[in-house]
Amino acid sequence: MEKKDLRIVYMGTPDFAVEALRCLVEGGYNVVGVITMPDKPAGRGHKLQYSPVKQYALDHNLPLLQPERLKDEAFVEALRSWKADLQIVVAFRMLPEVVWSMPRLGTFNLHASLLPQYRGAAPINWAVINGDTETGITTFFLKHEIDTGEVIQQVRVPIAPEDNAGTVHDRLMLLGGKLVTETVDHILDGTIHSIPQEELADCSSLRPAPKIFKETCRLQWNQPTLSLHNLVRGLSPYPAAWSELVNPNGERLSVKIFETAPASYNTTMDGAHPAKAPVLPGTLQTDGKHYLSVATSDGWLNLLQLQLPGKRRLSIEELLRGFHPDASWRME
Image 1: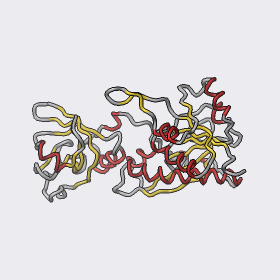
Image 2 (image 1 turned 90 degrees about the vertical axis):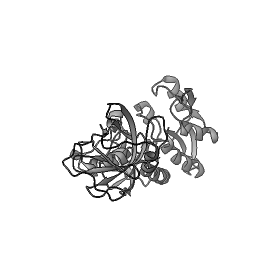
Image 3 (image 1 turned 60 degrees about the horizontal axis):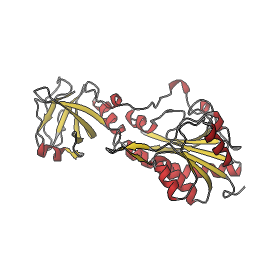
Image 4 (image 1 turned 45 degrees about the vertical axis):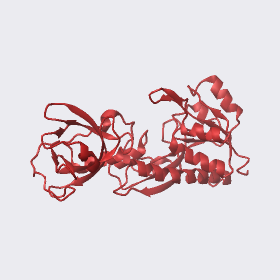
């Protein structure tokens, strides 16, 4: 079968899923339909907003479905009418068996980790939060349990010390588009040799990738410097780590923190020497111009990019021009 004859249904929602769809369309694959999440209200006016995948589908005149419920009979019948040979899922939602088992060649998913590690909703974030030096992408066939199907292909990708979740996301997104088309080609050629995940790693020491909530993002300053730094990296630029800045009067400001650098007692940004340990975690040190450091359980963390409520994101030098916390303030 030629790729132009293979009927593909594509499912996805965010930016991460657009690249693979673009590669399929521009590569001449026969995408007969697209499924994405219903429009959601956004912004102050709560205007309904299209998902990035919907916008791409509309721009390229691709048939589109946006079901509220994936088991809804009307949706299932509409999906069946597309007569897909293959379904591809990228950053969508858990599918019921009536959907993933429908095509004769099955349904495969692109996942942003080296499965079986980091099964779950936020694999990129957790790989960076945990200080990993490597991650990757995986295509695998769907089955009953989420993210557990047989692996088709994997690509390994290094995580550099300066990376954050955003840079890793963008790298994996571009590689993912290529991997999806390669996987389709192997399915067409009949050269797929899928492998059970149990054969790829020690499944007794798996690391999960659960959904991230607001409290997940709160910095606890009684933790080690490197752990806090990696948490900031793993949550930047979205949803962003945060902490409360407390002044001597007890007034609190919720501050988003996008970039940090680990520091020791003599490595603040201008070479100054903050107070030596033992210092209460959350204690601030600053020269009022170039650096703002926070005490941790084992050292100091330099804050490099912050955002105050209602303000834009600023470098620490920009922030300190108009905002003047001192050692009488603290982070909690």
